[in-house]
Length: 473
Image (cartoon, rainbow, N blue to C red; front, side, top):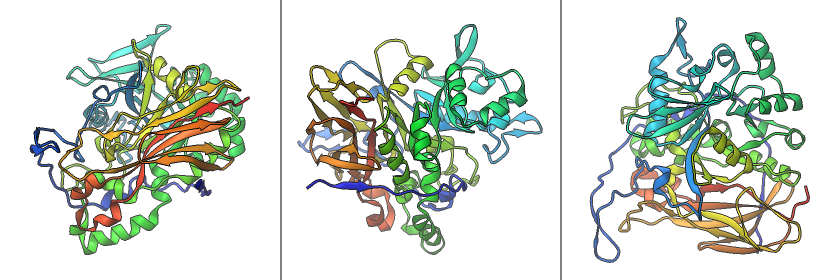
């Protein structure tokens, strides 16, 4: 029987991004020992645990693509409300916060970070400072000006960092300011209009809409934007206080029942049905990529947790989830990244549940059509969803339950047309289709405290971007 996923609308109310910061007080360490494998041999690991970090190039890529991973929507010292509301102290940049951002992106092995700072400070400073540049980095230049930065992690790894804004809208990868005068910059960056979209795009940016739930669906359809958010951690908190408040009370009465802090998101995660609703409406009118938004500010809970690190650190929040982008083989810069993101050749994964190994979603017809591709009208294709496994999963430990879904957009509804616990093949009629992978994370049970049954439940692991079959846009 076909399942129908109905979505609802809610109003976004800004609150501190990480009110959950005082939820988790008890943490433990991973043993990382050898275990006996299912065939009787010895599997030396290291196995997945809540602290594991895996670079994207360790995961297999589909076909001839190269997979990179990164953060979209993050705030630096050039946002007024970052760094515990002290991004600058007596006119001097908060160097500790600046270094923590750079360290966080390197420690989590990101390949790229698209910053989205607020305009009041952003407009007052210049490139390459806005690119988090320091000596030892390598600037990416076009037309003789720096457009992005390769942050040097000191161990051979580099992270491409591009500047952007969260103000009137959310342009990412903005290659230069729109004006020389600061006041004029502020005026332009605060606008929400089609002309503002075009001006930002002319300056090299992809224009996304932040906090999609706060936008009128018709505006999303009408504006010539490049994409939206389908999940934002900010809104996750405001929309799920019924989970947060009991946990706050549990903190006082029974903190021993709580699990490790690196899995804090597991206890309060909630899908953003308002964003999914708007996405389903908009893609019937035009192709529209969607991303996972980290929205990290490092500004809510300065006290360290028992593991010695604040809960809203750049490292921890960047470790929780990211956007995976499929690139052609060859040199990579900010422009190559933006071309793939604008096309929608990407998926978002909640890495705190495990790094996904082997995921693939494509259409097979006279050729292979990838995420973001438009299948010509009249061509017959099969949608194919290959389910991933958890990378480095302990074969002797508890095993997750992984389920795939293929969904079709239906004007406010994502209608499930295929689902199952193995790879899926679906003959697609005309329409817009996306894929999900959901997981019951039994493999995390040992780290979830004494109230495991509240946290070990099916949840979304991967959102794939759509394939557009026979759509006459």
